[in-house]
Amino acid sequence: MAVPLYEAKANFFRTLGHPARIRVMELLCIREHAVHELLIEIDIEASNLSHQLGVLRRSGLISQTRRNGQVFYNISTPEIRDLLLTARGILLDVIKDQEGLKRELSSSRRKVS
Amino acid sequence: MAVPLYEAKANFFRTLGHPARIRVMELLCIREHAVHELLIEIDIEASNLSHQLGVLRRSGLISQTRRNGQVFYNISTPEIRDLLLTARGILLDVIKDQEGLKRELSSSRRKVS
DNA sequence: TTTACACCTGAAGATTTCTTCATTTGCTAA
DNA sequence: TTAGCAAATGAAGAAATCTTCAGGTGTAAA
Image 1 (cartoon, chains in turn cyan, red, orange, yellow):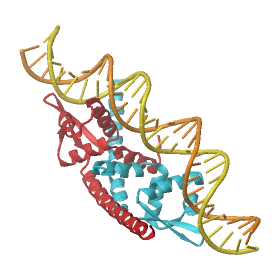
Image 2 (tube, rainbow over the protein chains, first blue to last red; image 1 turned 30 degrees about the vertical axis):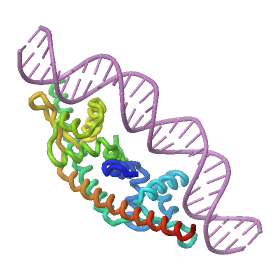
Image 3 (tube, each protein chain N blue to C red; image 1 turned 180 degrees about the vertical axis):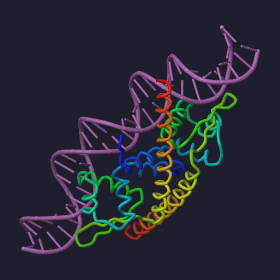
Image 4 (cartoon, chains in turn blue, green, orange, cyan; image 1 turned 90 degrees about the vertical axis):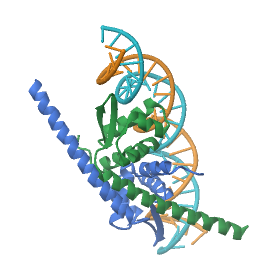
């Protein structure tokens, strides 16, 4: 054991760093979902989704309950909503900056050519 | 182009999901650092650090300035501090829960055996 | 107790990401 | 101009992660 905190942080972010997993987290931030509901939204194979849910579950980010023959998933802590919101803000900033840079580059290319 | 937003988010988190890169981000959240200063703190090969700085730079999370023959790095937006703080909170929650679960498991093992 | 449905798991090849080594670039000062 | 340091880059093998396929588990209704 004795994983340094920065390793734990890296693992945490890597866990979120997958398109299907991030979609799951965003859907669960809205409300609880059963697996088959997620499957409708996410468009990957059922077994793939199951694997990704397993990754999220084992890392402690989501929790499972069985009810009426279905498995429901939930985020394990509401702070995750804040995290995704903050991330969204940063991402929009970054994208904006990159587009600004792109415009600059193409305008200087115009000047040169 | 036209990367769906959830792909961009996944990329963003994956970028943070590496032990050296997360350490860089945390150091830069404290203050600007020159590459050789980061190198003292992080204990990986110089060229490896350079690669990881490249990943962060290309994703727009950090920015570079050259001064006195050294290259200084900075976080590109202060919101990153909030993100890391929120992540830290979630991580501590998750770890606490996991330790609770571990204690439960070992006490029920005791009861059984 | 069998059928059906919802979901999970293991294995394995394909793909991506990491780390290292060798080399190159950019700058500053002699 | 050249010497020397700081940092970046390219290539390539090693390692980790993804996706799919095949089969398995759990549960509820017939």
